[in-house]
Amino acid sequence: MKKRYNFLIFLIMMSAGCDSGVTGKDISTEAPSLSGMMVWEKTGAYGRTELAITDFSSGRTVELSTTWTISSISDPCLSPDGKLLVFSGVGGGRQDIFLYDVTTGAVPESLTGTLGGSNTSPVFSSDGKKVTFMHDGQFFAIDMDTKTASQQGFMPSGTYSCPTLTPDGKKIIYVSGESSASSIGLLDLESLSTSTLYDNSYAEDSSPAMADNNAFWFVSGNSPSVSTRQIHKGYLNGQADENLPFNSTDANYTNPTHVSGDWLIVTSDRTGGSGGEDLWIANAADGAIFPMSVYGSQINSDKDESNAWYCVGSVNIADPEDGGGGQESPGDDIVSDTERPVLSGRLVYHNYTSYDDMDSRMYIYDFASDTRTEISTGWTTVTHPMNGHFSPDGKSITFMGIGNGGTWDVFIYDIESGQDPVNLTGNGDYRDEDPKFSYDGTKIAFKRNDRLATIDVASGEITILSSNDGDSDPYSMPYWSLDGSKMVFGGGAGQDAYIGCWDMENSRMTKLYDRTGVVEYYPITIDEESFYYSAHVSATDNHDQLYKGYWDRRTAVKLAFNRTDADYSDACVIGSGWLVLCSTRSDSHGGYDLYIAHETSGAIYSLDDYNTSINSSKNELGASYTTAR
Image (cartoon, rainbow, N blue to C red):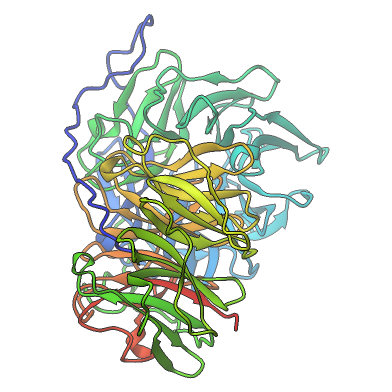
C-alpha cells in the first residue's frame, strides 16, 4: 500500500490524574493494598508479546519469556497459590497449552502436545486441580495431578470461546458466537445442559471472569449507541447485568480479572496512562480507577500492557531458565524450523522511487515458471499504477492510478488480452482509490472522496455506501468479508485512525480496533474470523507492525516476525499462516522490500530467495497473490 496518507503524528499529552468520570458517588480515595501476584502480557523486544509477573508482597517483577522458543504467547493464568502459570502459545508449529513453574523457573512444558489441533484460553479452577481450555472449538479440561485431558460435554456446531469455571467447579461460563451475534452462555457440567445468560442485542459480549459462584465480569460493547467496549457485571441467577461506573464511552475496557471485593484489574486505553493499552485497577461499586503503575514503575510502560491475571497466593519468583531462544540481533532472520513454502501461484505488485515521484510500475511474478513481467509497459490510459488486486478467477486485476483526466481513478485490466486497462471511474472529478474485488468477483469495493463505495463489475454502476463526513472521519482501504456481508476498512486519520467494520445490510459502522493515539490501517481479510492489519507500535513509536485482528473484536495478536527497529506492513494472504508483506528491514535493498513470513513461527524470507529481480533499490509494495489461472 504505502500511499503515504500524510498521517500527522502528534504527541498525546496524558493527564497523570485518576479521574473516575463518575459523579454523584463517593469515590475511593486510595488504591487498595495488594498482597497477591499478577501475570500479564506486554510488548517486549522487537515488538513480540512477552509475559511478566509481579509479587505485590515483595515488589519483585520478572520478565519471563524473553529466552523461550514459544511464540504468539497469550492468555496467561496463575494457579490460586501462585506456584504455577499456564498460557497459550505456539511451539514446534503447534498451538498448545504450556505449564510454567513460577517457583523453579524451569522452561515451560506443553500440556497438550499429544492432542494436536488448536489449544487456547487456559484457566485454572479455584482449587488449582484443573485447567479448562478450548480444543478445536470444544471445552476440555486437564487434570493437573495426572496431566490428562478430557472433553467437558459436547457443544453443537458453532463458535465458542473464553471458558471460565465457576469457583465451585460445577459450571462453565463461555462466549457463544462472534461480534454482534455473540452472547454469554452457561454449561452445567452435571446435567450437560446449556443456556444463554446475556445476549445484548447488537452488542459484543465476551471475556467472562468469575467474581464468585453467582457473579462475574464480562465485556460488552459494539452497540448502536456505544462503539467502545465496557465492563459489565453479570449474574448466574438471571439478574440484569450492570454497566460498571468506571467505564467511559471514549475508551475501551477489556480483560477483567477479579482481585477482591469490588476491585478488579482491567485493560484500557483511557487517558491518564502511559499511552496505548495499560493495566488499571478499578472499583465496580464506586467507580474509582487507578493505573497499575501506582504499585510499581515496571508494570505500565510506553508499550502495550494487557490481559492480566491476579491470584491471592504469593511465592518467591524464580529467575527463568534460559530456554535457548534468546532475542536475535536486529536484521537477522528469526531462527525457526519453518522452511519457506514452495509456491505455484502469481504475485502482482508495484514499485516506485517514491510516492511523489509518480513513477510507479506494475509487475506480475509467476512462482511456477519463475518469471517476472512488467505489465504496465505501454499503457496509455493510466500512469502511476499501484495496489493491484487479483480477481477470484485470476484473469483480471483492479488497481488505482492517475487517469488521463489527471485524477486518481479505479481501473480493471484483462491480463490475457494485454490491452490497455479500462478506467471504471473516469467520469467526474473524484479521488477514487483502494479497489478490492469481492470474493465472488461481481463487485469492487473502493474509496471515493473518503467514503466507501462499490462498482458492479458487469454494469459499471457505482454505489456510495457510507454517509460519513469525510473531513472529520474519512473512510478508506475497504476489504470484503468472505460472504460479502460486510467490509473491514481503515477509518480516521493520523493518531485518530482506527480499524472499522461496515455492515452492508444495515449500513452501520462499528469500530473494531482503536488504540488511543495509535495509527491503525490497511486491513486484509484472511478468513471468516480474522484479518491482518497494520498499526504503529505505540503513540510515540511510529514503526509499523502487522497484527491479526478478528471480526468479533477479540484481542488482536501481534505477528511473531515483527521487530520495532523496522516497518512491517501491507499484508497479502498466501495461506496456512504465510503472508507477503513489505518491510524496511536492514537486509532490504533500500526502502521497502517484499518478504514472505509466517504469522506464528516468525520465519521470514526476502522474496530474493525466489527471484533476485523482484526487490530492487526502489520501494516494492502493494502485493496480491492468487493460485487461480
